[in-house]
Structures are given as C-alpha cells and as structure tokens.
Image 1 (tube, rainbow, N blue to C red):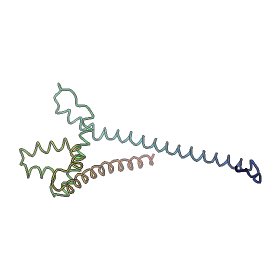
Image 2: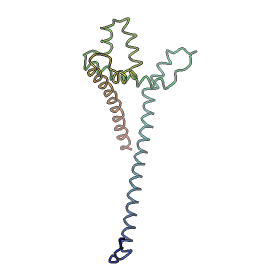
Image 3: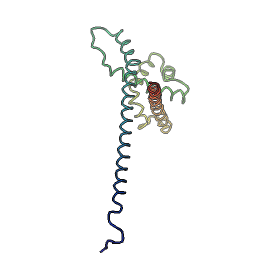
Length: 182
C-alpha cells in the first residue's frame, strides 16, 4: 500500500488550483466564443455570397431563358440554373485540361475528329454528363494509356476545384473588404 505523505500541507494548492481551473474555463469559453463568432462571419458571408450569386448569375440566366421559353410551358425551376452553372464550371475545367494536353478545346477536338454534324451531339453529351464522366474516367480509364487518362481526369477535377476555390476566396476577400469599410 502507498501511504500518503504527511509532509505536504493539505489545501495549500487549493486557491491556485481553483484559479487555474477558472482561468482554463475562461480561456476555453473565449475560444469557443471566437469560433462561434467565426461561424457567424462565415454564415453572413455565405448569405451575402448567395444573394450576389442570385442577382448576378442565376437571375439573368433565368430571365434570358424565360424570354425564349414558351409561356404555356411550366416554368424552369431555379435549381436547373444552378446545375447549369456547376456543369459549365466542370466543362471549363475539362476544356482547360484538354487545351493543356492536346492543344485543342473540346469543341475543336470534337469537330476535327467527328465533323460538325456528329460533333454537336457528342459535345452536348459531354457537357451534360461531364460531372459524372470525369470521376468515372479517373476510376475506369478508357484507353490503353491508363496512367495518362487517369492523370488527365484528375487534372480536370483539380482545375474545377481550383476554379471553385478561387471564386469563393475572391468573393470572401471582397466581402471582407466591404465590411471593413463599414
């Protein structure tokens, strides 16, 4: 058995221990408060970002589409325009990767290899299914040079995420600068 030493007076560390616990509690609460404050700033940023996105991108696309849309048909849901924007970003990333590796855009590559008549439906298919085809192209490479095909798919996906991250970061910096001025 271990016998407690009677040399150390009991309760001598009591006030220091309570002070230390109180200080730790204060630091933890202020840390949690700063995290919550950060969440509030991010929530405000995303709210403003979505408002600007709606005003500058989605609403003009919706307005233009509904100008040519027959009035008797059902209205196009707003999420279709959001999907169109994301698809356009993935298609842009695919074009960047294709230009970098082959020297041609997807349009130029499709028209030169398939001609104008067959190229248009193939390019439309690529546009509409690109968000699905890119990850599949990475997982299941299609040609004999599997390493090159996987690298090209990964490069296009990285370009898309880089484009998305760049837009979010620039919007956040702009938002911060606007709120510093107020």
